[in-house]
Length: 280
Length: 280
Image (tube, rainbow over all chains, first blue to last red; front, side, top):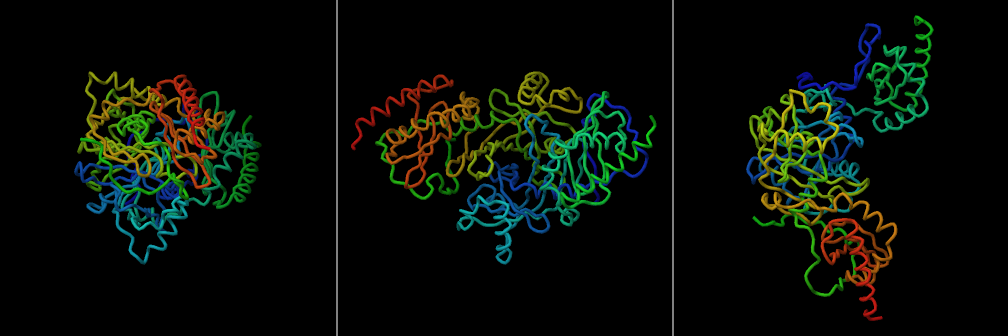
């Protein structure tokens, strides 16, 4: 099943309207697939909202807090008390989903942040798989170390069958479970916040160059980075006409901060070359 | 239906064991009911995990992010796109729940924080009630102002039928919906963080006095406030034997920070009087 874009779109990013984009025609800059975005999002957190089916009132969807680790295919591994409501629910009916959300910055619109709903079946982790489940869970949840060997608790796995991804307004789809299982979390995920902070603190001028000469926004007066991944990065370009999102691809995939630094140097050279050719 | 305590208990608070409590026999200090704790928790947030029943895969519980306001009875009011999955789910089957969680401090055990699951039926808000729903929703979600009048969106209410409350380890129950509807959010909720910060920054000595002479922990060497509500407050008392939670009631209910200040002055006098009577 391919990614199926669905759902409403509320315009955002282009606040107050902008001039038309003058980027030359060509393929759009590469970006992570929704399957990759989901794997990255789910791997970046260790707690979500687990929905199960309640016994009383019968059949009601029941939301609870659940900490998790992940197996190699991105299936969540839970460590649950046998007496907890969600465990009792799962024993009666294994249908479940796990909602994982990006953190929402203070004062930001929560509906602009990413979230993924992993739908699937809950089952108890068999004895042979328990040491791995335990290690994965502990790695993701170090505060659970003091009760990880309580007899009342056991490991459950959510075998993901289908995924709803919402990356913010207008970026949403159903993601195929096999594509999710094969996808890799973005190798830059842990470094991204530091890269963004550095670029915005020390390289605001370079970003204006990028937007003007590579991003098709020649009227840009200010620019700031909002996201970075192995394939490229996103900026908000500000001009007298408003704000517009600009994405640029890296010359080649980056899996480390050092490779991003090298890519930025190459892009600055490209932007200067484009500036020299630009009509005055 | 009364509050029914259920579920497992993982010991906490008493880390490493403590000496027995020497507080004189008598009624325990007053504290908020679980219905009041739920109302306070739900009123303190404006975003939760909404669980509905999916069409595809059919009957799976489906978790999504939902912002909300509250009506006078504490029923959540949602402003949803007709095209969103959760709205389509609710149209087919109105059974739903909303999970609301307390923020988890960095590095803290998430299972020690409070959360409430409100189970009930979703229904569209009738025209007469829409202006109030709109006002309540906007008050709780100011960032939604720019799309509050989009035609594609409508108001839904979750009529709460039953509530699962988990206030951390060992504090959990099913809460009756009528008790929840009648309960008042704690009037000190907004002031609590400031009161706690002030007490811990400037009145650590007073808290040691409280724990030693009013809280039944004569061996206390350090104490810090962890919670405050209209009926009293909670401290963590540290001694050579470990850490123990201590709750004290206010001489009378406090609904403002100024009343808390007066209550603390009275309690310091009580603690000094008790200290003068204590065996040496």
